[in-house]
Image (tube, rainbow, N blue to C red; front, side):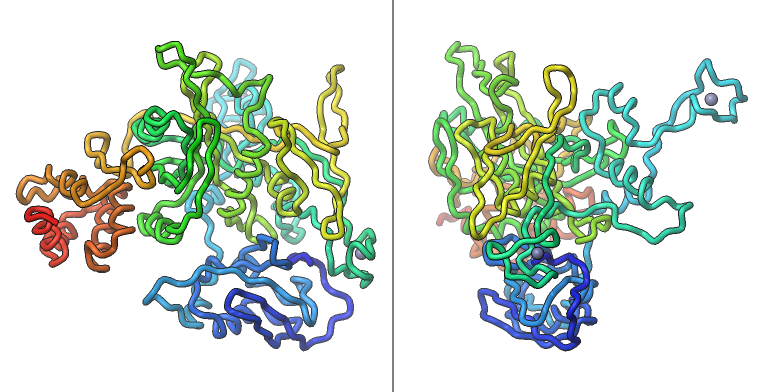
Length: 578
Ligand code: ZN
Ligand code: ZN
């Protein structure tokens, strides 16, 4: 069943929908014309408190599903839901003491784009051009040689070596084709998510796959092309020390490392309507590291860490991992493993990247489902062709996400090849092609079965460091606090570390205190050791870090913190002993 579908023919008005969740099975009465939001409100009264923005709906338990918020304004009929349909629910519990009443749930059920998307929605992104020698008009005039170019202009893109147009240039181009202001026809959402799944509730009414199939429920053939746009154009590390600290784990252990990058999204001026991911810190995930790979461990503290990130007004922006091997030359050079004749991102890594992208979907009002692809990026630190340690940044295309959602692809033993899964009773595999330029320079369609090159899914991003650095976390390289999940190299935060870290505060020097608190790894320590400060004092500490990161006044909060019982007690413990 697709959640976004056409009207169902044999509609009866009153109907029952079923919902399965970890807290039980629920039946709800509704009608074809009811909004899905009203169904969700009924549901909220039956479930334990949960975070509305985390609620996802899926048609099968193995499916990732889609955000409930994105479809709350659609009708039951519009979503193609039939009497007796079962939907699978997942959600995150609301934080303790923070339970949501039904009416509040209704209030918070709004799809919120990122601020950067709201800003760009109002911009045309026209590229200004200077007067040329061909111009025959006065200074105030304009002609075909000097009129501004649209942000998706191919010539400009090539001239400036921009590999993919920006996401908002892409939206504007689609809107210029489908939603011309002059045409007066009704608005059509320019974006819709790829759906390569067979519809198991076929509107033609036959038995579901594998017993029946028809043109209405069968996904059409897929032709993979290199995606011409990218959701994010550039990755900017706000401080080179962030990367240096991360690579240090490899220097100290000789084993690889993976981390979650957190930061924010902002304008990237070098590309028309461009977006950059600003990386402010790396949270090192629980993992077992090896010389040739990484095994991620169960992330038990996920909700606490994600909540901390949200309270700081930051968000997870990507994943970063190392693939480093010392060249043995004694000068610090590393082996170049990833190049045009081997691979850039292996099929295993690409599918891993897709799973992260699906975990952090991009809320988008231009998409008919309210969601489109993801702004989550994947960075690899490896050796470049000169034997230097270098970073490459990627995203996987939206159609790559569609292939994973429909369970159509798997990693292959050849890192550069993506394997197409075989058809079975659960999975219908449509014809998949990819478009390539052959030896005569002509575009040809190639069958993608049994495998196809991973590069058809890759979108490459640029990366760099800001010209003038103004990192969110102010503690800087001189004030180091042990990084989380590093016990394997003898780095593990404890009270003596805290004492040592805070010892540079001289007397009542409040500004030094504020700077020291502006350290992500320190905040992780306080988050996971909630017994040190009371809940209120902890919130104050996080708020000081947030305000400092945002350039706001922090001194009143700092005075409140140092006067609090918890902070005084902590000082005493650190002085007297523990
Ligand atoms: Zn002109
Ligand atoms: Zn059918």
